[in-house]
Amino acid sequence: GFSALPNHCLQICCGAFIFAVVVNVIREKLPDRTSAYVPLPMAMAIPFYVGSYFAIDMCVGSAILFIWHKIDYKKAETYGPIMASGLICGQGLWIVPEAILSLTKVKPPICMKFLSNHMNQKVDKFLHT
Image (cartoon, rainbow, N blue to C red):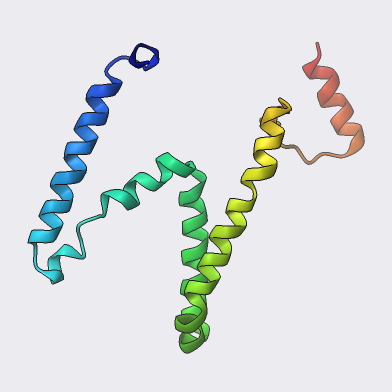
């Protein structure tokens, strides 16, 4: 029930809901030229549903599309939405192995290191002391 939620969670959710409604009403009332600069609350909510990594994916996809526009504008306009859909679906496919790893309680590494075998043994020995 609600008692399992953190303190003030319901108040924050209600405030966010009211904020989203107000922003949508303002966006609808503004002329088209200025409403384009008002963010969509649903677009702002996407990282809360799918995780913060989605913002990184969007940034990489936008960079690819930007470069593609510079190289071949016509093909980028034609195939850009298809490429974006493919990237989003590809990212979505990772959810299945991620869920399996989570259910089997596999702990991902916190950091990665690229060392020679000799140096890696020294670091591991130091960390275990």
